[in-house]
Length: 312
Image (cartoon, rainbow, N blue to C red; front, side, top):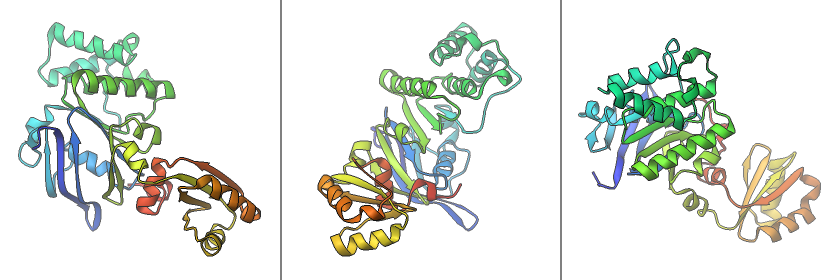
């Protein structure tokens, strides 16, 4: 494997019976980066995460991570990763500190070194004052912080985080991402997250957009946005299909429809904005002009919005 790659995936496919969850997916993750899988529910994120965390076996394709072939050497790989799933992974009847200590024991840690690591992690995630509390008495956000501390107890080289902000308030989400960036910068830890949140995706070094089991685009957030030149017009109309046809016939403008919304990408967005308002104001409920977003990129690559996908 390339020394610069923490993960390299080639032609990965996975089926649930007749349903294709992943379809010949290929990508690589640079060592020491924060890499995000961005997409709606049903795009394949959960299946891909489950394979990378060795919960699901390989069916087809090759996955090499941290120098290990996941098909033949998954045990050694598991000792080097930290994983946080969407579903809670804490023992609700133990205290916060007991959860971390028992996790450390699983990796052969003990004594003063283990307790020092526990205190450091609990402080980092703002739950040191709750270490004696039974986990079941904590709020969802606090439980999430404890889970993140728990997955770091053995000093993993790779973190796999499935929707890590689940249950966190905006302040806690900001602190979480600051901690992930610090881990990447100070310790060279590679971080892989799944997310459907645009603001989280923007904080990743690199993204893979997942749709219907395929990687439809990969690159840094800025590289992906730069695929769309100029500016983006967003138009909400009562009869979007009628307006779309009129724009094509009268202005030779091709708009993409998503429900009641039309999206138009043009290098001369401001001029077009004024012209559309002059000629079609009676057909428009609202119109706005802005720079392309990651959701625009997803729409351009797939022809659909996140909300139009079904649950996985």
